[in-house]
Amino acid sequence: MQSHRHLRRIMFYLCSALVLSFPLHCLAQSRGDWPMYSHDDQSSRFSPLTQINASNVSRLERAWTFHMIPPGEKPAPANSLLARLRRRRSETTPIMVDGILYLPTPYSRVISLNAQTGKEVWEYKLANGANASTRGVAYWPGDRKRKLGPRIVFGTSVGQLIALDAHTGKPVASFGEQGIVDIKKGVMNGFSDARFGMTSPPEIYKDVILTGAQVQESPSLGPSGDTRGWDAITGKLLWQFHSAPRPGEQGIETWETPGSWKDRSGINVWGFMSVDRSTGDVFLPYGNATVDAYGGDRAGANLYADTLLVLDAETGKQKWHFQAVHHDTWDYDLESAPLLVTVHRDGKAIPAVVLTSKTGLIFILDRRDGTPIYGVEERPVPSSDVPGEHAFKTEPWPLKPPPLARMSFQKSDLATVTPELEKYCQTLLNYNGGMHNDGPFTRYGMKPSLVFPGTLGATNWHGGSYDPQL
Image 1 (tube, one colour):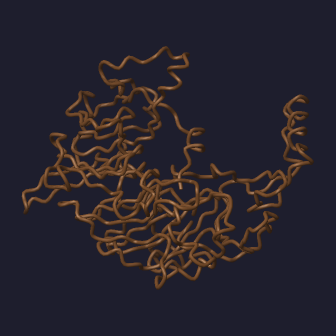
Image 2 (cartoon, one colour):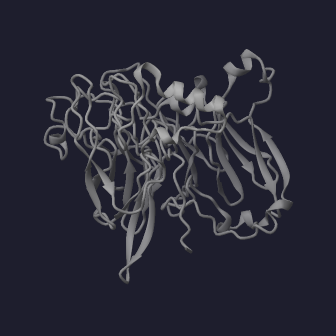
Image 3 (cartoon, helix red, strand yellow):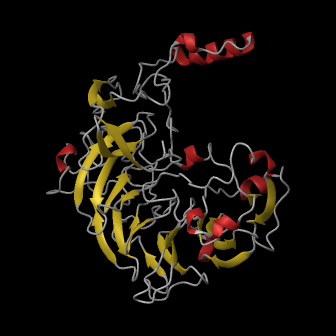
């Protein structure tokens, strides 16, 4: 799941987009394209461009500014209460194809800009104050044989999937109902007023649009976080994978409390997917089951929460899965894009997937079947003193590499920069009888806990990048 409570602490509020200038003729070439959120299907976030480097980056100058605040909407004074109330969050990474940028704004718009000049090419305004997926949009290149042009595809905060003509910004009339598909159908579980939308762009493989979802953090019951595949041409639903398995489906045995799977919310890909184009496999990093910090009503490991799930992108058929956290009560979602890499070991080139999450643990798996390349073991973790909780006794731990961040705390770690700071920290540590830390996977319990990493995580949706040249 995705918590606005947590995101507010890490997001900035974007009022304009700045482009730093160097000769930009290279952007019109395909080598300079950034056609999807993470640059490519493998989610490498690696650019092959070399024109800007360590020796000349200091000479960059601003080329243009595009203000996201639409004409006629005057911003309130920066230090006013009204300004704080009007703040709009943007986490977008623009995509670029043939020198044209495409991105959502925090003001109910999707825009396209000339990358060299910053001039607007077109604007699409969403109805009823809805916003496009916060982090970006997706690009479908079209189909020349069927004389179908490229499209910009995105989800919205109110549960719509929209396709626009990439050249004009007009809705594609043959997609869904005049360019819009209601993706709330089939997942709301009767909770018609519950939150359901998309905050990350969809993934596209061939003619299939792959969507995750943003759903509630609580209460336990609500809309499903199911992953689905849609026809990129018509908007028709092709397949739906139940992220909380139902009777007769693989994984139902991990929901030991009878009926606890039913109408369970959470277990959603609110972050980013990756695709192996050589196999057609889509890699899905799922979040926690609701509610975040308590699992008394859901005994068991709770597949497919906190699980890397691999499906056939065209059919939705399951290939394999790997659960990174059993019975999560820490909100340790998987949400950053899985990195598809090549590992060279013992003279062999192994196709691998690198999985990171809020825990800071890095799992490197053979992406053909999920086998850990460097080994994974189950390690004992602290028990829970919460009445009714069904805490798991062990959690997966990779033998290599080491964690990205600290996972424990000792009193000797207190800051001693100044006597005043040390005293303040000591007072805080002794709050309400004293905070405790029991090492990795310390529980939130009946006594004050000091947990590392916290719910924001060691890594969050931002994830990593991969340099294939290294």
